[in-house]
Each structure stands twice: as C-alpha cells, then as structure tokens.
Length: 317
Image (cartoon, rainbow, N blue to C red):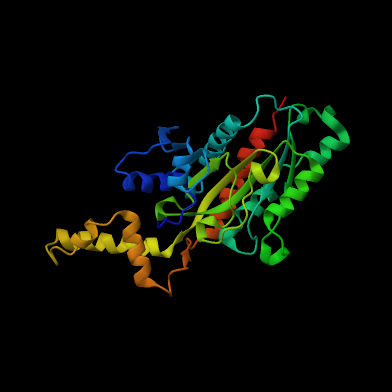
C-alpha cells in the first residue's frame, strides 16, 4: 500500500483517518492550545494493529505547531522552548539528580536542511566533563543533569551507521537515556519549520525521504530514546498534487472544464498523490524542496531546541 512520505505522526494519522473513514482503532489523537498561537497535538499508538496501519512503532508522538515559529521573535521562541521543556519533562524520570543524558545530533552539517542536529549540539550546554571533575560542588550544577553530546555524521562521511556510533558511545559512557535530534520530512508545506515533534519511540534516520537506516531506539541501544525533530523538506510530488487539485477546484468554481475533478473524487488522498507521482516520474520522483531561507531558519530553530534542552537539564538551585 502506498504511504505518504512524512516523518510526522500527526500527518500519518490524518491519512489513516481518511483511509478508514474516521475510524482509527488503536490510535488516539488529542489536540489542545498552549496560548493563542501554539497548537499541541498528541498521537498515541496503543496497539500493534494501530502501529501497522500507521507504519510507525507504538508510543507517544507530541507535536508543537505554530505559524509564528519562523518569525525572528526571541521572546516567542523562548515560549516555544518552554513548551518543549514541559513536554520533555513528561518523558523523563521525576528524580533528575545524577541523571546522565547523551544528546546525538543526527544529520550532515554540510547540507543545510539536514544540519539541524549538529547545530543543536553546538548550542547545547555540555556538563558531563565538568561534573566528572568538580562534581556538584559548583552551585549552578547542584541540581543539573550530566549532559554529553555527539555528532555522528552520516554514512557517506564515516562509513558507519549512526546507530553503530551511538551504540558504541552508550556502551562506553553508560547514559541513562539518549535524545536524538534530526531534521524531518513533512507532507504539507505549511508545516515546514513550523512544527516540532517529540516522541519516545526513537527514530529511523532518513525514513521520511526514503533513505531508511537502522533505527536508533531502545531495542538497539538498551536505554530509553527520545527523538526530537523539525520538518525542513517536503516531497516535490506532494506540492504538485496540492497545486493541481487547487487548480482543478478553481476551474470548477469558475465554470471552466466542468467534471474535470470527478475522476479524482473516487480516489483518496494517498491514491491521488500516487497518481501524480507516476505522472511526474522519473525526473521529480526523488526531488525534495526546502524554503529559500532555510539556513537562517535552521540556525534560529536549533537555538530554540537547544534552549528547551538546557531549560530541562540545567535546574538552577
């Protein structure tokens, strides 16, 4: 069965709902607002059947979505960081003192849309070496966690899977949990750089763009894994599909080419996209699109995520 190319569970749940006429067995979706401009969506996959239908492992997927996330407003981005920290606290143990956390920034720092992970680690407040040398005698670290970071690169640079590198570090440093940061792919253009997804299921690097690598999750590492990501690219086929259907709607409403839309009304969203993908194959079938100001947005959003992590792990006494 054709699956839309997206890493966002909320988009996959929308496709699942359309395919099942609104009946989503084993999947619970809840939404609420955190302030005027921030929408929180929680997707819980509770059964194996739900996981099979969604094409994602069982677990909790929470997204922070806001149109203003691309704006240059430091105060607003601080609010996003606070929401991120609140969500992370839901996945962390209540007792934080002496908690050891490894943060892995996935992706290729030489490719701007894929550089989110490495940039987050650059801005992160690393404390493991300080706590090892001075302990909690430093007053500002009295209640903080031990945080270490790694940027494993990509297979073309290292010849190794990211999970192999992270697994080796986990065996050597024995963290209590791993947090992985990665750029994602979205189904909708409106969610590019405007959505943060947090999940307790780990991540499969490259899955959104059809370049599946081995999963970085609890089963492969032996410790809990939290994945944080922001969609920075969208499949070109989805843009063509949306544009074509919008054009057909306009032509129908203006009285031109009546009945043009009828053949598509019998197809669901995934089937429509598959048809367009076949029509544009092979030239555009593997093309992904990113905003023109992606360098600035990735730089800004990497600070937003790192600040949320710092708020979570640096508890001031």
